[in-house]
Length: 518
Length: 86
Image (cartoon, rainbow over all chains, first blue to last red):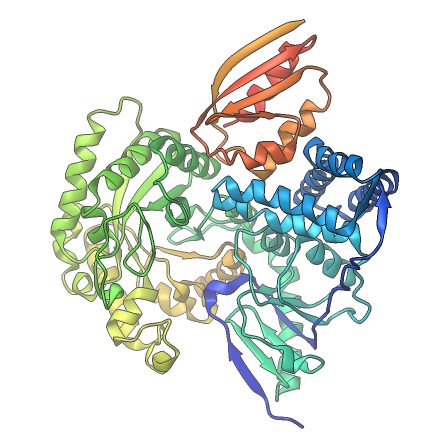
């Protein structure tokens, strides 16, 4: 029996949660033959066959059907056919594989030139469609329960894997906003991306833990794993009834990082949004989003959850991110440097536009504005002053709350200095833990020092929760810790009034709350 | 023959990215009029999902729409419905 190998995967790369145990398969797509030519009529026939297949296979969920429709539209797009016809005309009505690939690249170019990262990402769909057009991609060796490892995951792969009944997907590349990722979530296939190379383990037994972020090759305790899987599946069935539950003194809210997650969070029964990260609006672009763009996005989320609260965090970046339009110093230690509110104070025009968009959007729901990386009361006073000034110039606005992230130890130990200036607080246990233990959570060398379940972190939470209770103001937890169900009872014991977790975790955490309140 | 030229602000919070672009093209496939979108000096056929996507229009942006044909009014209502959907 070969030794067990454990590979950990950063939590940010868990796209779709779950467990799986099976054989690791590394399918290779059949290469596209570069020989042969094809007439326009034959191409039309292939396209309509492919369109029919898509219409047949992309069924069962609104998302899937909508995606299938877009694919069929792309296959029939006048732009694509103009390019095909142009080339066919020059070559006596016949197209080579090279010609077809040229058309593909021409379309991809068009999307890349848009300069919009979300549109650029759609080139995956184009590659996917053209390779389906040119080759019969078959994965003969894949079967029910297998764990599939691919270099890059395409939407059509997800659909196919779903039909084969595979257990989990692992991919070398990927991003949470890719279509493939959204599909894996919708179809509830456990999926982790950006995993290390696994080629040498193909064909071996593997246990995928897409809850905590671990891959175990040749797992040792197979019986334990099997019972874990059985429990998990049984529980999944029983979870639905917990989604709709509401508790008097504690809310289970969702952490959201982009618009597509709104529907999932609603479906899973979140009692509002405890943390709406706004970084997706600002990263990977050369200019900041306009106030109008931000307003429309905030409005959408607020309306979707009304009358529940939506806590929107102001832009939280530091020197570790490359944002060309922000003045950020080059620092040797960006996590102890200019980030969060510190960065916003140096880029006041960005902060002003974001606050204006938020204040305008406040007319459409129950808004909480959350200030990140606060370490001194002066920072809150500063934001309050700006808000007051901007509010005077916005006619249609609702009421809203202002709160702070508690993630710097200085705030924990002097929270009473803040309570007069804030309406609520949200404890960010990920950063708080790394600052308490002086251990970078991305650095595997010090991972043994980073423990958010430690009594030191719990004591900090308790301290903050007590002072907030005395002040009569709500306090929530929005780090990974809030999503650990075996910690829920302890966390509720500290007196916090909300737990905010990844949308998929809402039902499980509600169940844990229900059991803890007994 | 009707002709409509109007400026409209994209208030769909997803902008005119893949999903709304798909919805627009799907609905427009039922009308006879030609529909052109002008944005940042580019002029594209609104019945081509790729062309619409490639404009990469974010929410809050303003575009010009030119519609020509017998059912121009109907086409305009579709465009307004998708682009302006809140």
